[in-house]
Image (cartoon, rainbow over all chains, first blue to last red; front, side):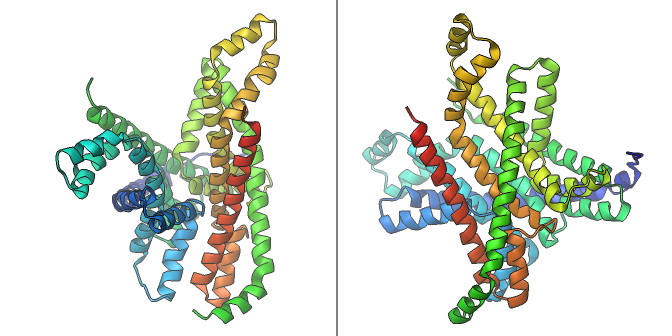
Length: 220
Length: 218
């Protein structure tokens, strides 16, 4: 194999790659915010005593978790306009990612909800809080704290999934990498730099999350 | 939505959908098989290896797990022909999926090994078993039982990730569906059908896993 490395075309476009990385991070951040709301609502549906509610929530979670995210993206981008719902590329991508994150987070939150001792709810009732107040000021904060590590993992995997935006031509890191690849033919260099950028970003996010978790943990 | 038109079209294209599903299943199966073998070896290396081997293993794991599967797939699609390995697009896709799978399996396997109480290996050593025998007769049966649920999850992930082969133009289920809808414009209907097929494949896989788990339980 006779291949001489030449990183110059990559460095010349490095700012584009960084810009793409920023787009990916913002897409993931936006989606996890919406996904946490969806996941929280669906998690209460999953543990609900009302049979149809629990059934619909369960169907949503198990269906979305068992199909590829690329399919959800294609459905949002190609199929919804046909049914008369039109979004821009970025809106439909964020919607797809949020729906996907919502299903995964619902499962995480369900675990968190079931781990909360019954005494907490009963204590809330004893001091005269209404069910909605108990949820908002007792259950949800406890649930969010105990599921924070899993939420961090969900965010990281969501950030990696933003690479799929390249498939519907949303300009983010993978899209630009592919463009540089076909323009410069520096194939190996492009993909080494791209993967290293992703690895560095996920590593940084993971370290930051660990710091944040340590700050939020209850001191004993 | 015109239901009768949809069923006529479905009757027309179901052989292609079946072909796509078979391609998805075959590709995922190969990736899971290669990835599991390589991943178990990697897990062993990380758990028992010397420091340099262990560091190499961790770097590989972090690199593969920190990179999106799509980037692995595109990298292998563009780099493999350059390296002169003579793999087809399918081969490049399977290579990327196997790498992804191996990282997951290595982590699962390492966790399984760590979960076996050290007394087990010590007891085996004290009755005079050699290391390979300890591994095969004492540790592996316990590790496999312990790691099965996580391994099935990894397999479901691989089936889902195999949809990315559509991006490098391998006609598996998703690309087949795309080709179908680009001809008949029934986007919503056929993407839904495609989703149901993936759902069925993965549900079968998890149900099968539960069954094996029940058989293997004490």
